[in-house]
Length: 282
Image 1 (cartoon, rainbow, N blue to C red):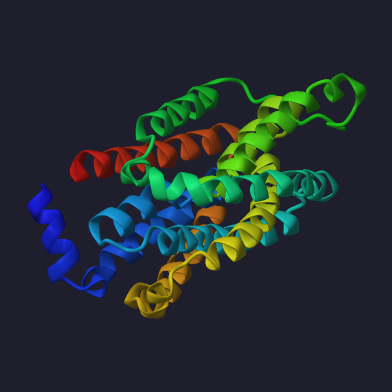
Image 2: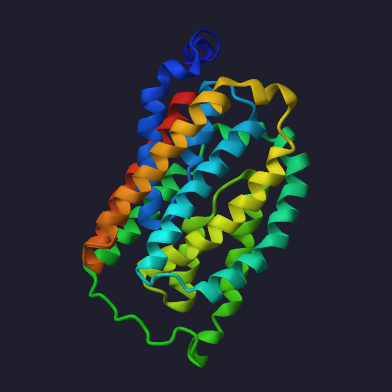
């Protein structure tokens, strides 16, 4: 395995593998449309491990893909009335100090823990997918008329804690945060899947803009001449954003039960791909 990784890094330019990278990007976009899935578990192991791209450049690319997907999904969700704008902006502002904290600690954590980026929590992601499939079998619960009524307010404490944890990860290792934000919105204020995802993507848009700018200044000078940045990134972002647009058409055209099945299937496939990455690179 080590030998094959060596040849991929040294003997084959990344753009030879562009079709595979574009397919991965397209799938990432579809997963993002379903539940705000981040590009991190798929993009980081491939670029950093298989192709030897600088870790900060890799994180920057992953954040930009998440940012593009979040932009597309936020616009689509807003047009469909599925974004809690005030709450989303408030939570996004609350997340910013935690992102800054993650960035500061990441300056020490990333160089000393590069092995962390050689795999991802694929099995945990698959578990989440199975949970959504289980939800699909349950009777749909009507959306609350006002999710901010007093009976929900006490759940803001775990919501804020969850947002803080996810935002800290955004800054620390560059994980987009959308799926985590969405899950906490569903658990803590009973937001329906589409509303939770739309609001989470608004939060992710702001989070990834801030995090990508801060990570940008940590990319070494040699990274700016890399072919993946000059040629691959625009096409990968375009493919990912197209996948988000296509996936959203599915998400907004099916019932609540089928939406959970769709999310579960996509998340399980993404988790399986992440787990296979980890198996291959080891």
